[in-house]
Amino acid sequence: MFFLKRFKKPLIIDEIQYAPQLLRHIKVEIDINRKNNGQFFITGSQKFSLMEGVSESLAGRVSILTLHTLSLK
Image: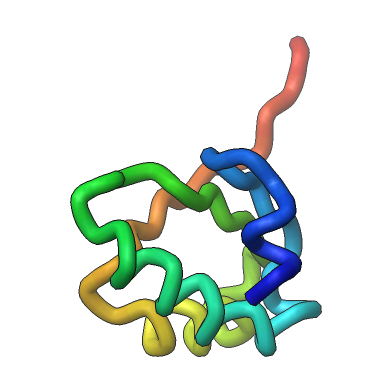
C-alpha cells in the first residue's frame, strides 16, 4: 500500500492487468476515503477477459468506460 501513498491523487494506473496485486490495495484506499470519488483512473487491456478480474475485485467501486480507437482522417 506504500506504493499508492507515494503519489498525489488522482492517480493514473495504466495496464492494471499486469499488476493485479495492486487491486486489493486500491480497494482499501477507496474504502478508507469512500467520499472522494475519482481517486484512481485505471486503464487496461481492451480484451474484456483480462479486465474481468478488475471489475470483480472492485465491485461497487468501479465504473467501466469503453473508449474506441481514435484516428485522424
